[in-house]
Image (cartoon, rainbow, N blue to C red; front, side, top):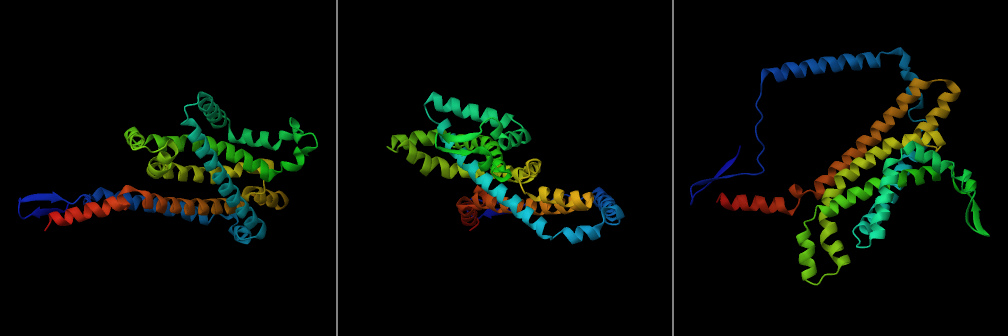
Length: 297
């Protein structure tokens, strides 16, 4: 632990950014060695398993159908997350309204789409033509079967499902800002909209980003459910391939590799975003360091 002595007051000023030194114990080395041995045995057994057919995995790892499915998975996830964030922002603001009708509508939306299983929702969206044959009025209407494909049904289902969670995440971010700050802004004559844009939202972002990143990672994995409606995602393309050559396990290994890769990349991006918007990496950290430096002189 780092301490700095002030020459005038003869007191120690503790550096708040000093990292504590961990205690080392012999059991740490034994447990670590045991973990490495067990992990090595598991990896060896996994790699040398002939039933996994690693040569087939290598043949299909960068195959064109797999790459097309991977791009479709990323596109589905990004587009659905973007729409879900828009839904979350609009409904979270409506939930802050004094109008009880708006607040009731927001609660009903969140309760419905957060409680409905995603797989069921995707199936309903894909088969919506069974109970809504046409969309529109009179001559300005279109056949639902033409409009709702596997891709559009996946976008609608994923966006509605994810939007229900984003409403609660954004609302929690708004609630994290102390009410006194809003009251002070009103005293200064700021309107409600300006208060939200200038005071509440900039502070709520720090609280909103971590759970939003977690939801996006969950959405990346949940997008595999689109395979049940033929959405053209990564798992759909793998199913089409092993449906003809019966190489089920190797193709599932390919799918697993790419899902793990994109999830790790998303996790890395979330880490940098959290670090950028956290208090410990912002101006407050520089201010505290300067104060500690002044106390040490």
